[in-house]
Amino acid sequence: MASGSSSRHAKMTSTLQDLRYEVEGAEAPSPTAADRSNIAAYQKYFTGYYGGIMPEDEIRQLYRISSSGAVGEWLGHPFANQAIQVDLERFSIVQTPAFAIFPFPNALNHRCDT
Image 1 (cartoon, one colour):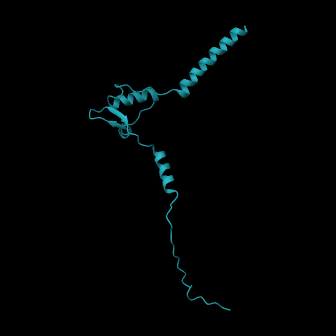
Image 2 (tube, helix red, strand yellow):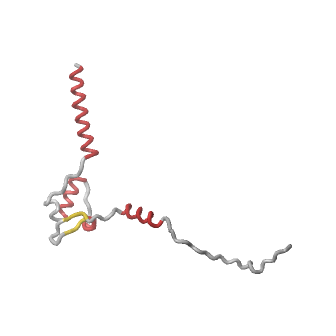
Image 3 (tube, helix red, strand yellow):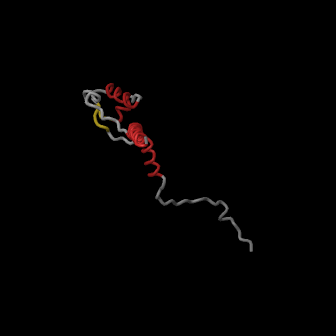
């Protein structure tokens, strides 16, 4: 009985590991040439795997579109939050010396009472 129990446990553990990989660690299958033949086909591929549609404008911004309308390679634009972070890092420290003059209107008329 102990051996049957351990066999079932090993099978269940293996199944759970496969399921965990499928849910957490699975990578998207690469789109085929047919999936990249036009924007509508790429949207269908995207919907089938990710469950949502990628807008045509976003596809045009992120991928090179050939003269025949096929979806080409990724253009490599940074995501918006990454671009904002780069700007924050670039402009958070200004290394320019500043010289400031403040007016003191009564400075020349001040009397020293001794």
